[in-house]
Every structure is written in structure tokens, then in C-alpha cells.
Length: 205
Image (cartoon, rainbow, N blue to C red; front, top):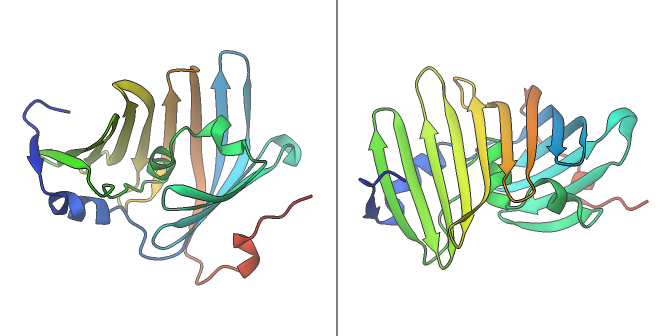
């Protein structure tokens, strides 16, 4: 956060957050590559977002190996299959949303600071030992950056390049503690009118 950032009422940043919030259903398909200090693996996946704050996340490796899926509502999981799938890839749900170009509102009771410079808005939520910072840049190279910290240590950093219309183009999540990096390249996007009810249910083998 810039030193010039000032405490503000949470409503001060609502417009910035709402500009990223989906107001219609979305379906993204992507390629992914995960690397840590032991190995590198990749594959493809999809995400279905039911506006404004529910998503179904599916990933699999080459030739459909090791499929994983999850349903997330806001910043909690309704279900995950297998149960540790998201823990391996994403350490924080706000960072997960940021990878798809979506910022989250402040939790009740959080202290908010904000700063604007040109076409860039920067804001921070602080609650207890946790902080979440966002930077949303418009202009010729639009992007959304999110950094989550616990007790001052960086939990993860997500940076998503956006199209002129605000759709994600590429995303990178870095987790320093592992260390690990997840790269996503979006290959298609669409706006389904609705999703089949089975999309929101877990499918156990």
C-alpha cells in the first residue's frame, strides 16, 4: 500500500469492487500450469460463474488425468472433490476470485484504506492479523492484482491481465511459502443463459 493511502468508509471502494463483480453467468475455459520446487504439471479446466458470487471449478491433467472439482460460494467451499484439491492450488478464496478478475467486498468489521493515482485504484482490507490488498489498473494494460497477508507474511499474490471489456486473459498466482506458481491462460469465454442443476452438485466416483 502507498504511504499516502487513507482510511475510508467501506462504501468508498464499493464502486471499484462492483466494477469487477459478474452481473451475468459466465463460462471460461483455460489451460493451466502449476510449478513448485518438486515438479511441474498442467492441463486444462473450466469455471462456471453464477452471478454474483457462486462458481464451479473443474481442472484435470493431460488426457483427463486426476480430475478435481469444487463449488465455491463467496469465500467458502460448498464442496471440494477430492477434499484437498483446492488446498494444493489456491491458499485463499479471495485470491482465487482475483484470478478470474473478480474483487471481493470487505468483511464486516474490516478497516479499509484506499488510494487513487490516475487510472489505478488501490485499496486494502485489514481484519485482525489478515490483510487483503487490491490494485485495479485501467487504461491500455488493464489488470487486477490481489495480495493476501497473514501476520505480515504474504500468503499469495494473484495478478490477472484483463481485456478491454474486463474479462480475464491470463492469470498468475504466486505462493511464496511453498514456493509455487500457478499460471492460467484463458482460451474462451461465453455467457450461458443458465446452467444445468447438476453443475452445482458433487459427482463422486
